[in-house]
Image (cartoon, rainbow, N blue to C red; front, side, top):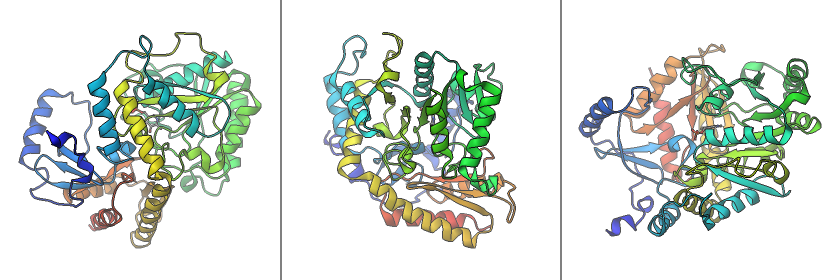
Amino acid sequence: MTDTLMPQATSLPQERRLVTEIPGPRSRELMARRTGAVSAGVGGTLPVFAERAGGGVIVDVDGNSFIDLGSGIAVTTVGNANPRVVQRVQEQAAAFTHTCFMVTPYEGYVAVCESLNRLTPGDHPKRSALFNSGAEAVENAVKIARAFTGRQAVVVFDHAYHGRTNLTMALTAKNMPYKQSFGPFAPEVYRMPMSYPFRDGPHAGPEVAAWATSKMDKEIGATNIAAILVEPILGEGGFIVPAPGFLPALAAYAAAHGIVFIADEIQTGFCRTGDWFASENEAIVPDLITTAKGMAGGLPLAGVTGRADIMDAVHVGGLGGTYGGNPIACAAALGAIEAMEEDNLPARAREVGEILGGRLRSMAERIPSIGDVRGRGAMMAIEIVEPGTLTPDPQTVQRVADACHRQGVVAITCGTYGNVLRFLPPLTIEDDLLREGLDVVENAFAP
Ligand SMILES: *Cc1c(COP(=O)(O)O)cnc(C)c1O
């Protein structure tokens, strides 16, 4: 089949196309099978099933073509089925699919670690380790920080999202749906105030950081803190961009007290925000950085990267896992990273951000329920409130998202209050298609 050798990203028509009602008959059939076979606990956003995807579109099993403004939650940054990813995956799958890196190592794993060490902020000696999911990377970053410091406490922030495993549920802020009825949670996790400019009022970043660090001093004691863990721009929590100075002040406090500063860049990393990593925006050099989502073009891969002295502090055998750094996922990451470097995707993310941000700001002038427009690069969001107030309006967000879905646009929501519409288009989306998608979003606000 030449079909599999001819990457679909280049061959799929880049258009919004509705040929059936949404969901169409084949999607409805599959949905009935899903209900009969898949746990009801697994959530769902769109009622349609995917058949192909690439560039800026997802085509469903009924032939409808959707404009993709979500990238499968910030994963397909280089585009779905990116040719460089597809080719390397096919070659690696034909060569070998698994040996376990801890049993018989292979070059791809080492090459991904070299890329991570080279691309992450700071030119100090670094090491990396690879895992399967973002949550697993965060858990391991905490393990490493505890082993290095000999301390236990972990500081996290309001509105944080770090995953759904037991430790990361404790690190995640939001109860419903992530934590409700799943306790008990891991101990020694302390939550501090986050800079949230839209809701904080006029507090400056350093002021909120000082509030957080004084709480750390008083409630935990700096010498008990192994790690401060923070998303440079909050993802699931609502694309909250902390006020300037907040993150540098936290990093300085961590450095002054021997605390490992961990940037969770699982959503923000790998070109999404217009830099390789969002930490670069305020020249922060994290001690450790967690990555996943965008790094492997859709295959499951995650990493912890950071200071060699910290990463090497763990006893031999203390890190690992059967599948961590699977060879096919590593091949995909090398293809994705090549695409990011050769196509200069940080610059493309800034271009996408200009179109997105410009359009969202002009929408906010016409639509009074848009209380805030925020984000950076190709990671932008609007927060929806009752006009003129800070009162969250999650019903309107859900209504708008549903209307977008019926009109052929994949739009996704987030936020502690469920009232944020977030935009994470693949960087391979054509400008006109992105503009058309945003037209649909604006029209969806009409009552
Ligand atoms: C998605 C996400 C995670 C969890 O990653 P999974 O691969 O879903 O386990 C952790 N942190 C942040 C910031 C994320 O956006």
